[in-house]
Amino acid sequence: MAWLVGRNLRRGSQGLAAVPVGYGLGLAGVGVFAVGGVGDAIWHSVFGVEADLAALLSPTHLLLFTGILLILTSPLRAAWTSDGATAPGFRAFLPVTLALTLTTALVGFFFQYLSPFLQPAAVPHARFASFWAEHGLVESAAQPGLAQELEVRGIAALLLTSLLFVAPVLLLLRRWQPPPGTVTVLFGGVAALLGAQHNFQLWPAVVAAVAAGLAGDLLIRAWRPSPDRLGAYRAVAALLPAALLGTYVAAVAVVFTLAWPPELWAGTILYGALAGLALSVLVLPPAGPEQAPLDGAPPGAG
Image (cartoon, rainbow, N blue to C red; front, side):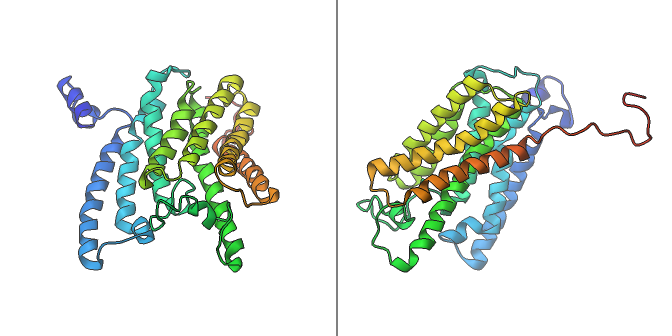
C-alpha cells in the first residue's frame, strides 16, 4: 500500500488523492492494527498472556483481527469499484481470489473452535481420528451421556463452516463471473491454511474441500449464476454447501467408520443447502417495486 501511494505521489497526486480507490480502509487498517498491537502489549502486562479459547476472544486480538481484515480486503474493494471486465481471466482475477481466500481463512482462524479442519492440539498425532470421534462422527469411547452434546457440536461446526465458505462465493457472483479455478483455490486454500495449524492431521477434510471447490467451479461454468440469472444463483447457493458437506461426510466414511445415522448426516447436508439458499436471499434479495418519488412526481421527473 505504501508503494501504491508513493507511486501516485510521484505522478503528481496530492494528499488523499494519492490513495488508490479501495485502499483507504486498508490504510486505516494499518492504524487499527498498530493500536491493537500496543493495546495487546498493555493487556498482556496487566492480565497476562491468553491461551486457548481466551486468545481468540481477547478484545485486543479482535482489534488486531479488524485491522488485518481491512488490509486484506483492499484488493477486493479496489476491483469491485473498477471498470474491469465482469468475466475476467484467472490471472487478472488472482488478486481478488487471494484477497478473499486470506480473508476467509482469517475469519475461519478466529472461529477455529468450531472448525472441522482442526484437531485439538492436546490430542497426539497417533490418535488421528479423535477429532471426528469427539464430534460424534465416528465411533468413540466417549461417555454415553455426552453423545448428543458432541453431535450438536459437530453439526454446528459443519453448518458454520459451510456458510463461511459459501458466503464469499455468493458475494463474488454479485459482481463477476469468476474464472474457473476460483472456488477451488478459495475452498482448498482456506482448508489448507486451517489444516496446517496441526500439520494436516485431518488431511481428508482438506481433500474434501478441494473436491467441493471443483464442483463449485463446474456449477458456475455450466449455469453462469448472476443477478440476472437469479434461479441459477439460488441453485448454486444451495448446492455448494451441500457439495462441501457431502464430500466431507464421504471423506469421513472412507477413511474412518461413520457413526452418524443417515438422519444426522443426510439432514445436516440438507440443512446446509437450505442455509445456503437463505443466505443467497440476504446477499441478493429479490427485486422490489421502484420507490415512488417523495413529492408525488412521476418517475423520471426532474
